[in-house]
Image (cartoon, rainbow, N blue to C red; front, side):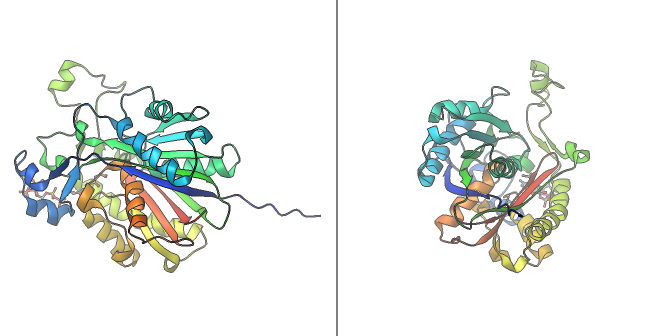
Length: 334
Ligand code: UT7
């Protein structure tokens, strides 16, 4: 007799986010670098961003986001089997920020590791968690995107400093009990573009020394135009690929939740896919580019605005330094 095997999908059970209260406006930036509100708004779509104060680090934003996601999911921290923290700006090189979160939220049974795929880290985390849940290796996973990019910015470089903001977003994932869950995934990378977006020091190639700091190698660097061009080529291709893998057509997708890098990138992606711009979530105006936190923050905002209902098919897509990209199609609901 032939036994039919049903695959348990991994669903998002709860969402949370946290941004620091301090708002940095374009007018504030006009006092720091030679720029203008008009340039920033027309070239990027950004009007404000949040910025940490004092010695706040990624885990300080991650913990309240995680606690909110757990409350939303109706799951206690002790029920977590795994914590994946997507971050490009961990509290320190090691131990993992995920371990610091594990201790502070009391996730006593959970394994914990950081995942670094730059701005794609959160979606890479969702893809990883989904595979582990589907395989039956774990049940409840907390996936975070937590970033304090403003700490690594070169505040004398107007091309990067005006783009970034701080924040954290979190999801709790677990086995689906209804029709919701991750239907398809895509991950990709192109290391030949490693140089276009990087933080050169602090690793084993260029350890941090006074000389390194004097040369400014401890600050993030970006070739904005190259990043822009790569993103508008790869993101539409990846959306089409992941939708096709799910056995769906673009008409079946009610919302795309893209990484928030530049509103002009989102507009170019909408044009290239033929999807109306209204189907792309945009939160860049308020938060700027929060790297791996931008997708979960945007997901949280879209749900708060009543734009997501059970049964909707969403695409989550991250892209960034590496170059890396990751996407999934997700049917909303448990
Ligand atoms: O998370 C993923 C990582 N990041 C991204 O995805 C970013 C992708 N790239 C971008 O978003 C855009 O390339 C930028 C926003 C970074 C730059 O926009 P752009 O339209 O590509 O500008 P540009 O680099 O071609 O520069 C145009 C002009 C230049 O002046 P000149 O040479 O024409 O006189 C720049 O010096 O704009 C100047 N400029 C600025 N002016 C005022 C660059 N930054 C600023 C600024 N304020 N902040």
